[in-house]
Length: 158
Image (cartoon, rainbow, N blue to C red):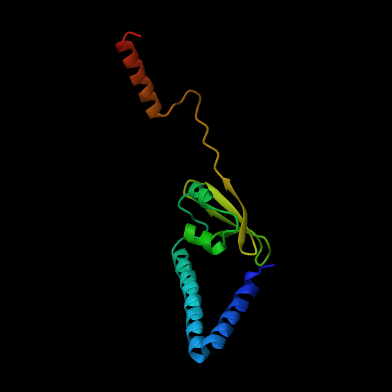
């Protein structure tokens, strides 16, 4: 059960009641102003994250490996969206728990995240298989380093 859905409204009523009892109408006005400011800060953050996500393709992330390193258990979906700056590609049916989303980077690596009640419970990193090189083929940088190493060893007499 998500206790925040119950505790936050109860705490707000307690704060308002305590402010009324201690300071009367001016205390109630100050406490309600503080609660309204807290609510507006959360709403502003939500709108900022969604605005950033609207400018990017669904399920896109700059680096899946970096996202994998930054993820922490119990992170909210909003927090993960803020890190990726994009909405995740939904893999689970709508309104079904757990919710599964995937973010993919330009190299083909992807991170699949599973959220239960809006909190991250597990994630996996999938990397594409490296392309098989033909037998004996080496990248040019390796060939150049090997050739220069041979030249330096023959020049030194070894």
